[in-house]
Amino acid sequence: MISSAPTTPAVNFFDLIKRHTPDKNGVIRSGGNGPATRFVCGGMQFEGGVSNPLLAVLPPLLHVKATKNGGRPWLPLTVKHILAELDSDGVGATEVVTRLADILFIQAVRSYFEENADTAEFGWLAAVRHSQIGRALALLHGQPAEPWTVASLARRVAASRSVFSDRFTELVGEPPLRYLTHLRINAAAKRLLSSDDKLSAVADATGYKSVTAFSRAFKLHIGTTPGNYRETLGRRVR
Image 1 (cartoon, rainbow, N blue to C red):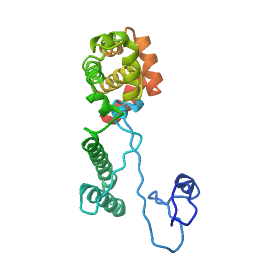
Image 2 (cartoon, one colour):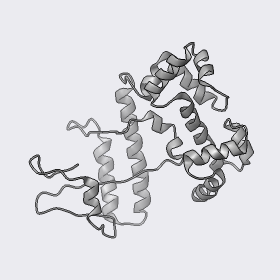
Image 3 (tube, rainbow, N blue to C red):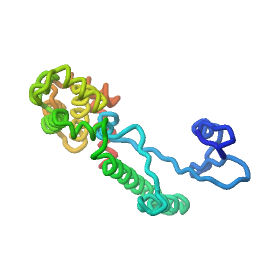
Image 4 (cartoon, helix red, strand yellow):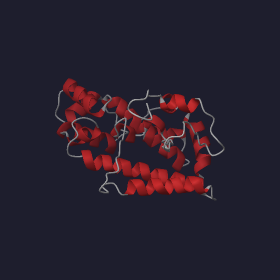
């Protein structure tokens, strides 16, 4: 929600966008004759979609503030560079903005880790610091193809099944086996794009006993079959 002043009614930002037609550069203008406020909006997409483990690490919102004393000097500098490229409409501007957006995201993630690594009470950072859940995460990331069960993981970290499952879900944000599935699908997605291995080899390497089971799980999480994923995205990265 946005408004021009504390005393004026707030408007849904996305509704405002829908009511205006962007120009050829994607710019939308709205409002009266008051001081101009500029929003720069964009989107990013993970190759592995929702299966990417980084999504389990991050909170729903990353809010990075540029402090007056320069606590985040990279923020205004990077944003200023992005704005300059967007305004220039020069050759390669889109590619430069894309790379700068990647840098902006990486910096924001790094700031989140630096600020919360020792204080987070919930989420992936807190899970990593937890003696038992942290060890379980190490096992899952180190051996994703193993036939893990909640019971076997609990035994490896010396916890009862119910306590382990509840604490894992509380800290990580999803049950252990769902987290494992995301790890496996993400690993499979990377392998599909980086190799010419047969689907049977990719399935076996990521913990699936058959191509059918692998394809079913992959399509459920990615939205397309492994073959289509390789053909479509593989063409983009070549």
